[in-house]
Length: 210
View 1 (cartoon, rainbow, N blue to C red):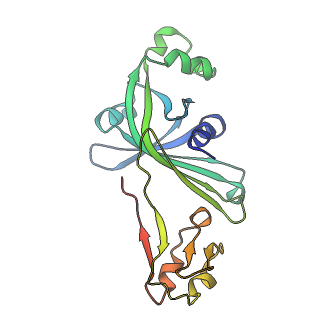
View 2: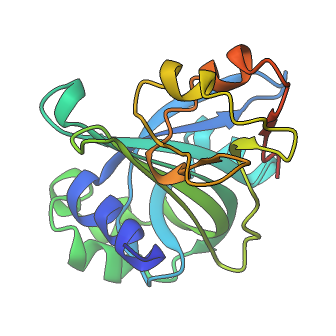
View 3: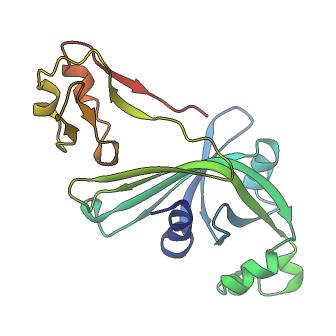
């Protein structure tokens, strides 16, 4: 899928995500927030100006979220995003109400709706993880100009082709057609077994911290 497809899946299918922000002491705080719309390159949601979430977003305009869909672990799809946010205020509020009709039951009058402010997640990166596929399916994406960087485990030129990583890998996603072997990132669990068992120290972990 493309970025716009992942964002649309979050809005149309998952819809409610658990959002993490940081409080004044630097500690994480979570909240359940509905992702109400996407333009294919950003996400939109609303929160009331009287809520502590609003204050946290204003002071530190950054969040991380995860949404899940599925009946159980083995049928579940997960979509995680971390990105920058900005307040739009009343802009798009009527449009979000039109596309999310249930909001009229929560905020039925124009006066009550004035308590809500629209936020846009305008730049970030995301990760898709699907346990219903065999082997598992993983993908990463960026939006709003976010920079895509390598993340996960990678086999370097120090690989000697001994095969110990292949035997230990639960999803059988190491390509052995040539040395150095290659980890197929789209099916990797990122359990770290390959690095722990490699006698040549050929496996390195690359982490995205942006």
